[in-house]
Amino acid sequence: MAKKFFLSVCVLPVLILGVRLGPSSAQENQPEFRVTVNMVQLNVAVTDNKGNYVTGLRPDNFEIHEDGISQKIATFGEGDSPARKVLDVAASDGGGVSEPPGSSPKDEPRDLPSNGPVSSLNSALAGSNVFVLFDTSNYMYRGFVFAQDAIADFVRSLESVNRVSFYSYSRDLSRSAALTADRSQVLRAVRTTVAGDDAALYNCLLLTVKDAAQFTGRKVIVVFSNGPDNASVVPPEDVAELAQSTGVVIYMVSTQLAQLEPVSTAVFERMTAATGGKAYFAKNWHEQKQAFASIRDDLNHLYSLSYYPHANPNRGWRSITVKLVGEKKYHIRTRNGYRPLPMRASADNHSTQTQ
Image (cartoon, rainbow, N blue to C red; front, side, top):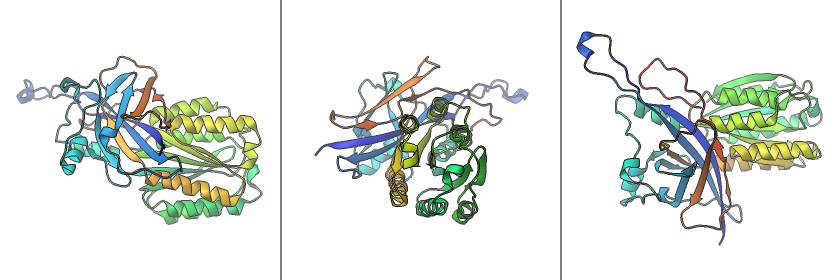
């Protein structure tokens, strides 16, 4: 039976080591090392040709290349379970993990020191953060309450998600509920939202991506839109590239009104596909709830993989490809790369930074 594999990719740089001399005379001959290593995190959803999720895959089922350079998987997790080091996964199975083509012992990533970065690594990989962005423009005057119901049901259903936030937009962005584990706070924000002005979707989505990029772990934006953008000055291509480079996955649930405009339809589809997400066009409120349920199921069945990129002089756009070992007939949907962003300065020796 043919199977389709849907992948989403997330880029996560981790600050680990660099060189510094201590100020005291006792430490003059004992330099402290700090080296910057990028960790790239991949979120992978796997389905068969009937749309059913495929479970039970192992790390050695996947091949990863960045700019054509074979990469070695460092951590792996499935579903809600936390990501673990690949060697730990192999040990629990009582077997080994096969090497990806072209790898060798000298390609091994640096081990993280035990006095700080390990906890930073766990923080970087753990948890899912979902940002809900709701269209409250004048497109939403009809059926506003039904849209609120669909979003509220979606928020309640996110049992495996650590934290949820709720934003709304018309011409401006309203951060109605900051990222929180308290679902009741988010639901109150949903219920107190009112319809507003023209729709500046891309302006407000860009701001939401910037907010999401500040957090570690899996970062997802779910947009509910009832019509095309008619007030933004930011092009959607800029939004898509920033989301790719900061590891933010975008899903969009749109009504048939947006689908009636071919430009908006194409833009929504391109933007979501570029980040590893998906666009849904619903004819009625029932189909909107089905779309939200599909997104929830996707989040619940993701594989989590990460790797430390081998030396790469490319400071511009880096392409990422993921394949399944020995399989040629599977369809793969994935973000196709990222652009490394400047590292922000950190005051402590062992910190984790999310792009």
